[in-house]
Image 1 (cartoon, rainbow, N blue to C red):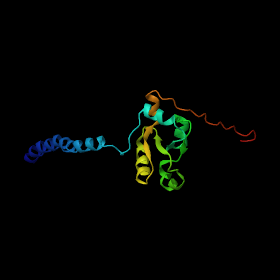
Image 2 (cartoon, helix red, strand yellow; image 1 turned 180 degrees about the vertical axis):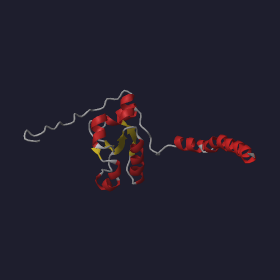
Image 3 (tube, rainbow, N blue to C red; image 1 turned 30 degrees about the horizontal axis):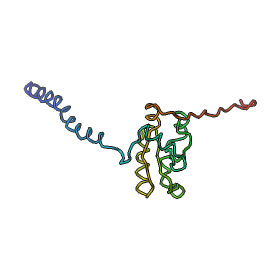
Image 4 (cartoon, helix red, strand yellow; image 1 turned 90 degrees about the horizontal axis):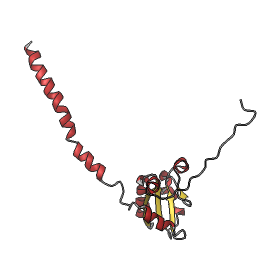
Length: 154
């Protein structure tokens, strides 16, 4: 019985202290969340509109998957290179243009912009298609092609 009387207070002390021990990690996790994922400038809607008005000088590289572009929309003219394929595509990206990278919320676009800048490309910044639209920008929406089942299919 004495062991039980000693064990119960010890159990409760540990149970109450455990959340405090885990909360000690919270400041470092919050600090990591505040640090930018990339060094690239995130373009505002106005900045992106000004750049898009210069199609001969600017190249938009959309690093999203094709389904994201068709579901969410994008800018009217762009080069589509998914984020995972960007580094092996560097040889055919023109170096004489100012580059804007585009993703949904500028996360992947920022990382892509950092990669391109590190390889000597002139990067204006990164943009998010959904953020752009939320700020009043107009996205081009592409209608997905429909497929019809063949008449003889079972």
